[in-house]
Length: 597
Image (cartoon, rainbow, N blue to C red; front, side, top):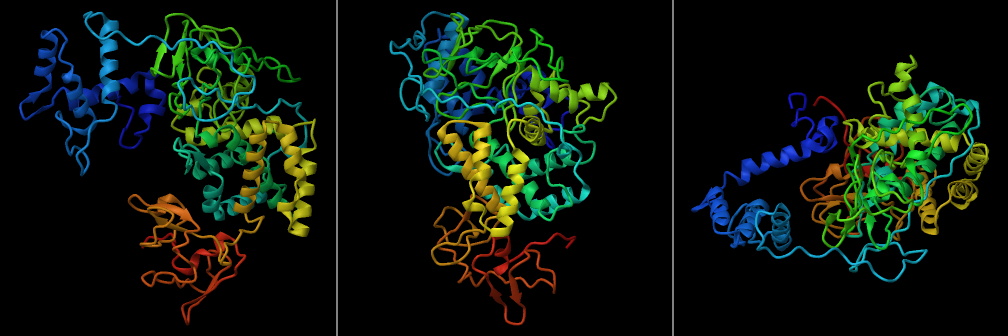
């Protein structure tokens, strides 16, 4: 792979265009195996000799597999051993690895004396309920998850609001966002870890969002009337208009993708308690490859379906027993057995639409708003991709043909911004240009009233309209509402709440919520070292009594980068306003600045 620099682009193993249909993921695994397992020769235990002894001995001594598990997992053949840690440990999943090894040998028919593979999970007799409970699978049968709802398709409304925003509006929005980065990441860009804890999103980062916003508001741009709205540039409340539109967009993004930290659509729909592999063709009774463009001036924009196309997804759900990433190809398929952790293809399994093959089924949801269907990808290609370039029109991604490679949204080396860009484009198409709802008039009334009264948090008019517009189940509406107002707090349109002592909520590095050993201030996890993370409102680290070892910064006159708190340089004392936003409360201990020294 002469074109891939694995030191500069290690994630290329999973997300490079050069994965060659999944070949690269296997190649690095094979290299690791030859480099670390096949060459293992420690204390008289030689892998190649033991492998031949196992084979020549009639495939009976399965302690060979357990020894290999130890080498693979912790670096030694006779666990428990210290391995890669400081304590004696056993390899994890040793029994599962041994069982799977025997099933594979049985399938390869090298011998017939292995334990028979477990039978496929039997079909249960009860019929699934119409409204299954959402949650993590905890029983022998997978819990049927509620399907994610799609924003309805709206008729486009031609309006000057969709034109290229003035430079003044773009610059003002970028400046405000830059000042809100830490709070935005802390309050909004969070996902649910399988443990149930809230973690910073791995896929949806502030830098990716910021880069995408630049693409959708300036430069080459996404074509006239497709620009993401960040304000009009001349109204007194222009910046606030743009921030509220951003807050609404991100709130929907959390509902669709960020909360589960997924780029590719999850395989969530079960048929008789099984996950059909053919769900890549469509879930919720939909057929993604039949979703052609029907709106005026858009007919014929959809992508042509290629039954020979083969694409493998990158992400999948993280609950226990969850199906692997979706994929498409020219063949019939079965189902995912969540008990054995294997695909079963003894008999084709139909999805809810009746498909038991995955020919041409490459149009599942991707990105922050989970765009799906041949029409949505065709419009992406027409305005942002190779089709625009071929027609001689400006194109943000002239080298990406979204009709030939829809998976680029999640697998291209620019996917960090592509996940956001494609969502913003979809937002423009379905929300900003909607005729059915008074989106912009309601947004502006909400902002104008909030600026005058300072009561954004008590005005539900805009979010109620948005929830009616986008729909969803009760939990989705609740989440969208919460995240919307959290985003407004991040932008300081709603003042940051104080804790019970009257001090502003601030963030510190620590090994946990109660770790007061250092109390180093931080804005994101990247500011912390080792195993520490950035926690908000740590009770053991109070702003009124900062550790003596932490110096108080003394920025130059008129150079307070936080815009609110000031330090009396003659005494080192800190003047704190209790209801100040987070970005104005961090200079009590230190401030970081860019510089050559």
